[in-house]
Length: 255
Ligand SMILES: [Zn+2]
Image 1 (cartoon, rainbow, N blue to C red):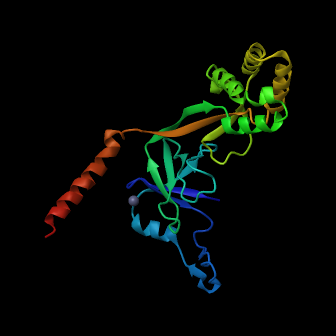
Image 2 (cartoon, helix red, strand yellow):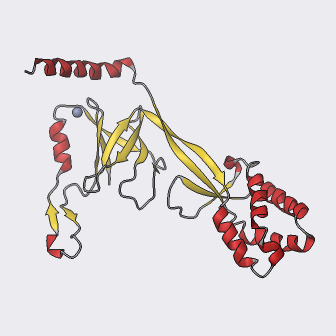
Image 3 (cartoon, rainbow, N blue to C red):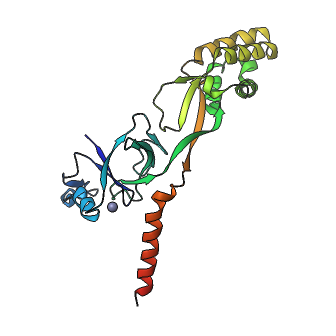
């Protein structure tokens, strides 16, 4: 069971995992299996030493608050989640600058928001599929871009928060796929019916119906994490300012 511990004095956090006391294994260098190294770690002991005599409190991690930048497989990606001491909710940033370093956790007073950067068609995949399916139909083959233009116009009329999410594993938690809704679908079909010849339209209608739910016609939304930092209340901020000034005073005293 993972436990998040906050030092109230320093506003530092430590994630206590069942692995703290386990030795850390470095993967062998390519072609050199004998270079397998084992490093003994006890990071929590270090944390306790640094924050001796400070006020420590456990934080509860809020379920489903986890969000991450970058691809899931990327060991250097930065993530955020929320945690509470029962009175206040904090934002925790999880990151590391170097793959050989353990994950670091930073407590932030504030919250995050997911901002929609764009909602778009999977243009390349659509054109590729179009060329594949209509390669024996010269009149349609040349009109993939026209169809894409119509779809893109339809997308500008959609509200992402009213679309149904398609729950396929995405390589990033900031890229989410959605299905065209009924209204968008009807609008797309009507525009295609108006634009294309009757025999071409029936082919296109088939294309749309084949791919609308789980194929190339899924819409891709790209989000960005925005962090909104809160200014600490005066009462809480005071000790930090004081200790900073104390530090400056100490530094001045140094020769
Ligand atoms: Zn401390």
